[in-house]
Each structure stands twice: as C-alpha cells, then as structure tokens.
Image (cartoon, rainbow, N blue to C red; front, side):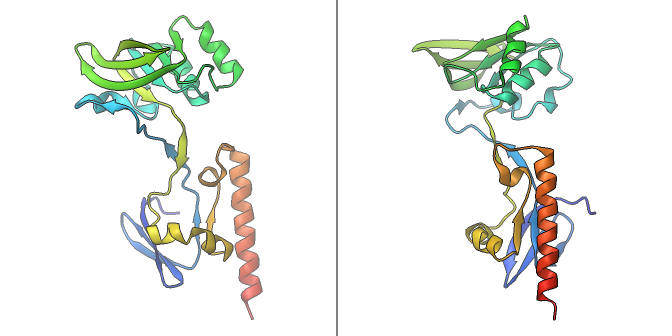
Length: 219
C-alpha cells in the first residue's frame, strides 16, 4: 500500500500510465475507488474575498464555536451538518425546494433545535463580504431577502471524483470497462447508493473478475 495521490491516469497503448505525486507506474488494469467530491455551485455569484469563508465540507469548521453558519442545501448532508454544528453555533438552512429532501428523522431533530432555522423556497443569488462577515442575498417566495452570517457551507450534493482520469480514458471508459481493463467501484460508481457494504461487494466482485480473466487467459 502506497499513500500517494494519483494526479493522472493516461492510456499508453494497451496499458495505463499512472502518475502519482512521487512516481509513475505502468499497469494493464486499473481499479478506481476514488469516491466522490462535493458538487460546486455554478449559479451563485460569489464576491471577491468571500471564498475564504465558504466551504464545501463540514470538517474545516468542526472547532468553530459561537458563530452563525448558513448551509445551502436541503438533503441529508445539509441537515446532518446542521445538527452537528448546531450544538455550538446558530445555523441557517437555505433550501430551494418547497420541502426538505432529507430523512424525516433528521428534519424532525433540526426543527426541535432552538439553534437551527430552516428556510425553504429560498434561492441564493449572491454572496459577498459585508461588515458582519458574509452577506447572502436571496430570493424567497418572490421577495428579496438578505442574511448575515460568519461562514457558509454548500451541501448541494456530491459527484464522482474522476479529475485524475485523462480525457482519453474518459472517452474510452465504457469500452475499457467492457474489456475488463478498467473498473470503478464504490461511491465513485454507485450514485446515491453510498454504503460501505456495497463498496466492499464491488471490490470483491472486481477482484474475482480480474483473477478469473487472468486464469482464463493463461495457456
């Protein structure tokens, strides 16, 4: 096991050239188990300097106490973040839809917390630096609203983490998978079904397929 970040996977003939931060490897088969990354917002204007107070994961704020934090999103992650950070901070959840998309239990717990405020049907238009931290300009039920917070967390979903695959590999991905040369397992492949047991099963299945195909190809 090598603890090195993979920065590029390229095709070199029928083999893969895998580049890490420290070396390069040649391999006939690649198994991708890179998981997911937070989806970035593309429809919110972010003013200069505001980026330093905007996050896409909760862990950078795990030690923050006594602040006001906005969370954009209405799914499980948004409410889970709110419940965790709401123990020591005031939380504002901003969701686009009429109803939250999280598990009913998460919403129930959030509604019971005196430090969590939930605003549905609220679309964030612009985030800028204000006198009191971040200034969030929204449209809520056809009304212009503005909120002031110390930090903001986007929790608007996740997407496969495949930045390191070259464009050539991405274009030929389906054919490489059908040929048994490229495998995607776990969260990177399973969409909403992000469960440890499923990921482990994917890994075992991929390993068995590789072994079987190797044995079948031997004289």
